[in-house]
Image (cartoon, rainbow, N blue to C red; front, side, top):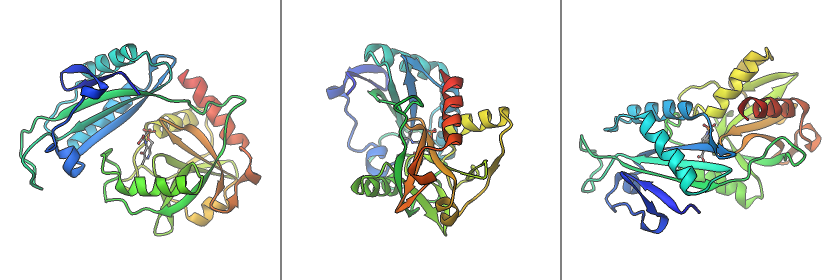
Amino acid sequence: MSKFVFLNTRYVEFKDAKIHIEDRGFQFSDSVYEVIKVINNNLFDFDYHMGRLKYSTKELKFNIKIDNIFFNKIFINLIKKNRLTNGIVYLQITRGEQPREHAYKKNLKPNIIAYTSKKKFNFPNKNFKGYKAITYPDIRWGRPDIKTTSLLANILAASEASNKAAYETILFKNNKITEASHSNVWIIKKNKIITHPATREILKGVTRTLLINIIKSLEINFEEREFSINELYKSDEVFITSTGSLITPIIKIDKIKINNGKIGQVTKFLALSFYKAII
Ligand code: PDD
């Protein structure tokens, strides 16, 4: 747990970081967030995360102008103050406080919190690990492309995986895979890499964007399209991407082994290419 938290204007100790009970983030999940990775004391892909934060706050009409310099300074200070080597910076911005009412008042003052936590990443070295996933219906609200803390459906799905000793829950809607409870999903079939298009049905992951850039620069066969549960089960390889998971192989889905339950060559190659590109 981190020692210091940034709260609106100042750095306070974790135990002193308090938010009002009529904060709309607390009462209505009227809030957005970002998770940014820190590796060897360095913050990664900051501009991409700020770009998505701008999108989220704009789509929800929050009364805030995202200032990259302001946030960069806070994140760097937190990494230093909390002596973070490997882990994440968590940023949450709520719409603000008002007497409880569904409709929001204009010009509320957003609450901003940021803190860090340690994390062991699944790097593609000798300890590179493949995991089991399960499938579960995608019952989320209609705008999962906005990174809000309205994550009830995601946490139910993730907890289902946890109950079944699986790492992640892959979501399906009308028999099509959208993404996973906290990551994007990719399949490989006959050396073609496939992932769901960045529509309003998925979160456009920063890791996803970075990996697509790498795939394009390497001129690898790639397609953004929907795929079915059946295609998922019959894939040569499956992996997920996110800030916390980087590129993580999925070697079993429900009762079905993928690539005989082993990490595939293409996944390993992509994970290594990604690692080299960021470090
Ligand atoms: N999760 N899809 C969903 C539903 C997510 O929650 C996430 C990230 C992603 C991947 O996005 P990115 O590559 O930008 O991390 C896709 C974060 C890490 C979380 O909720 O902790």
